[in-house]
Length: 284
Image 1 (cartoon, rainbow, N blue to C red):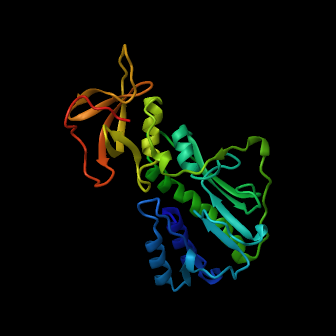
Image 2 (image 1 turned 30 degrees about the vertical axis):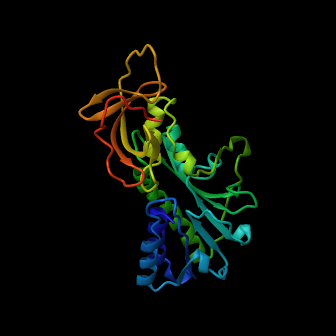
């Protein structure tokens, strides 16, 4: 689950307790905090039946609402309501918010849609958009999108509580794009990219994700924070080499532009690798 799932659960159990049959909680080892413990605490305080995904025997209710859920749900599509971190039909698939931030989209949002036999192709119930400015971290974007989740959740839950029909619109297939699944290899920084895109990448895969991975010579490290600096003319440009040390912070050559590394920690211990022990260091 996620911070968005936590806030949605808080609103749902406080305002719509009578229509909630059960809260099923997923766990995700790929993030630092999946908020599963916090969601359990909310359910216990409200007296709402809950279980972890691996212990869940099966759906008993008429409708299912999926928030930050990445597993298959065996339930009729017209009774399954999915919340997705994009303005569909763009960014169908996996980690859509991460992809949108890496791409530098200035409008992000959330879609509430019916389930479908193919992922994220169901009819759309509601959407909520949000304008963002860069730089922005994934944590900041998630917090901002929480309000979109709550407003859409309120509309859906109010309709279910009152018995009103749920009206939805078909997606425009000509506008569909996809966001691929990500694994540990996708955290790796590609220093041949422009500094602006690397900066957005660092911000997009930071907390609650594990952070942008690189090697500082032979040491596996995570770049936690970085910023662009004005480029200089380099006669023999090699992406990843340190060109300057600025107050103990290395400035790294990118495919285009330069990136100052503000915070970088060893992947195994979490301790800072800055300041660097020497000048001639290659980030790879």
